Image 1 (cartoon, rainbow, N blue to C red):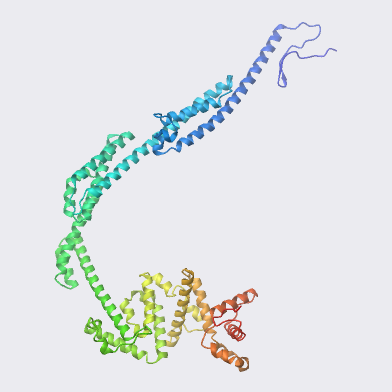
Image 2: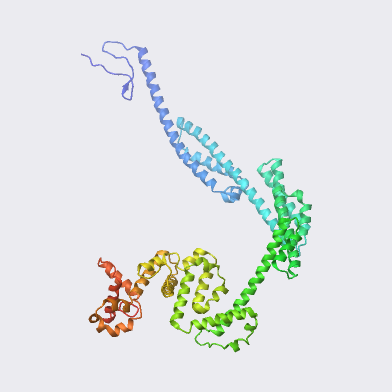
Length: 583
């Protein structure tokens, strides 16, 4: 049997249609020709597809170059976009020409080695890429040209505005018209150039010219008003009103009117004040001076009230200063000072500066102070009870004047009077700050009540004094820690300090041991007990014991336990007097 075979070309896995030749049979010329044609077409298709792939591969590389050049162009901002040195162009060549030159070079370099269909595909894509890139460069040039034009106008405008500010007005308020007119002309010319550069229409060009004039003339008007030349400002405003933007007209007209009213108010206030009238009489004259003008009446009344208040404040401050000096003479606070007698004080200029009523008030305060100091325990109770009462009402404290606080010196003593003044002054009128400064930002009374102190209802002076003393200690401890750390303590830390103080107050040795120890427990500690009986358990020792108990997984020691531990630790020489552990 004869074996069949294929004599025609084969492309891929599919043989082309061909005549099967059997031995003994003659070939058909028509069939053979058709097979050769199909084979040629197949080869041509393969070659074309390969060329397309190769051309598109080159275009991908060209696209990367296009993006790289686009990013480079975008880095050339402002004047750099028009400076050949900045973008590496030849003299006289624009950024657009230089950038396209670089791109064309990249097209040539990337397309080297291409031919036939691959080259045709590449050239078609490269032409499209070039068009896109040129558009990007042109857009960038247009945008940056606007920026440069605006920057140029802004620079010219700033220079001319400064020229008007410095040279357009003399110190006495006279107007230098030549200087102003020249600067305005240059600003208007720069505005026209900007408008032409941006290709704006007539309306926009006119608006820019008006803005240039308005800004220049506004500087002149503001300068005249600052020099208190209200009349000159009004004349200049009327002369240049048509050269001002409508909004500028409204603003400057209002300012000139306000300045004129303010000058009129000052003149009338001087006349009324010179008559030495009472404040009510001055108020009546103010209504008459601006009859029918409510704004003028209010402005004049406000000015007269201000002047009256300034005088009264100055008088009060002078009295406070004199009174403070007299208090220092009578009851000195420094160790080396001696108290001066009343006859001696009455010969001083400070005493002469007070009127009869003020002298009598001071005598009464001194007598009361002297009586309260006859008995030290009573003075202490009164001092801390008053201190507590004042700190419990920060809203009342913030309303007190320094003079009113100083009048309490007889009760509080100089130190605690100064403490109150310092708290009030540091608050600077802010109630929340004063609350924080006086420990009213934590529930002081509730916490003190937890440790057995009386805090509810109408308290006796002694109980109020205990709270005042405790509050004073807490405020001192807080102040010391804030000074040491340089940080303002929050309510949580303040409460922690207060509780430690309360523990130490409750656990004074004379209280806990006398009530809870049998004599045999502590008689042998008598010398040590006497040495520490008047002192509370130090905070440092409380911190040490709390840390030790925490490390052992045990609760913090009770006040009674702390007292025992404190006496034992001192007896054995484990801690010093401040409660610090010895090495």
